[in-house]
Length: 136
Image 1 (cartoon, one colour):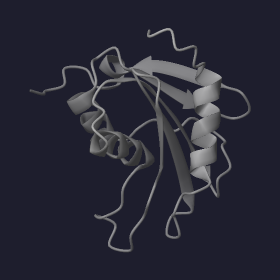
Image 2 (image 1 turned 60 degrees about the horizontal axis):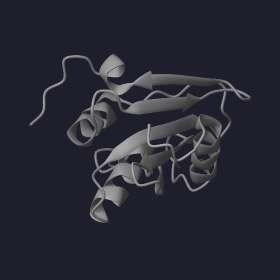
Image 3 (image 1 turned 90 degrees about the horizontal axis):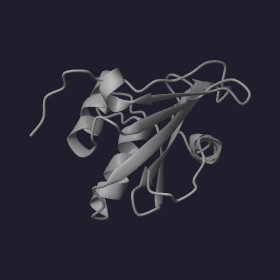
């Protein structure tokens, strides 16, 4: 932990704000993410859909790609929230593609924070959600 004093709830709240920018006219499932770099910067992302589906992008990858495109490669945690019509009813874990992208840029102890209904929060490390991953 870097001692930046960013609490899980604060990161989840930022993910909720990012979820408001979701472009999801096809699924109406809105997702937001807030990525904390080791230097204390936060990069947010939302899901962006496309009618052809393949070009769609998840909130987690939007945040990670935004950070990487600015030269940041060291990450501490990501918070993720999502729900139909932007209503959070349950936890929204990252998909397999996002887990693989995380493994490209993050260590196995990278924290994945999921915001659920109300103030519910679950925390995992990447190694738990993507065991035996492959990489460089």
